[in-house]
Length: 135
Image (cartoon, rainbow, N blue to C red; front, top):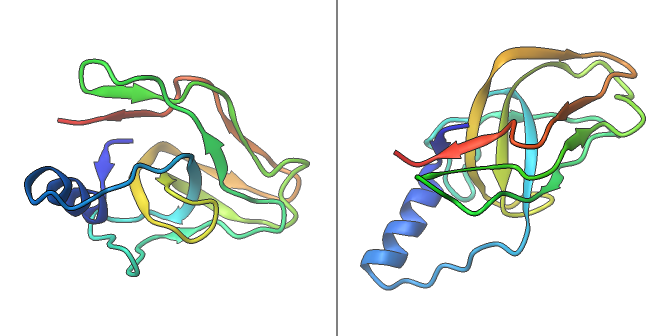
C-alpha cells in the first residue's frame, strides 16, 4: 500500500506549512475495494468502490511506529466474520480511513493479486502484510 490521497497530502502540507490544525485520528480503519481508489480522493469526493455486504465492515487497525519511512499493520485483519453473505466480486485494493463509516481515505494500494469473494468466503491479512511507505 503506497499511495497517499490528495486529502491527506493537503492536510499535512497545511498543517506543516500554514499552521492549519490537523488532528490525527484516534483509530484508523482498513477497508476493501472492488474498484481501486485514486490519489484524486478528497474529502467529500470519494474515488473507488468500497465492498458492500451485510457481513462486511472496515476493521480497526494498528500500525507499528514508523522507521525508515515505512510502517506495517501490527495485528491480523479479518473481514466478513462468518463469511460473505453474497458474492462480492473481486477485491482489488485496500485502504486506510480515519473513520469506521464515511470519513476520509488516507492511504490505499492495489493488491498484488485480486481476491474473488463468494458466498461464505472471508479475507484476512496477517500482521505486517500491509506496508505503508513514504517516499
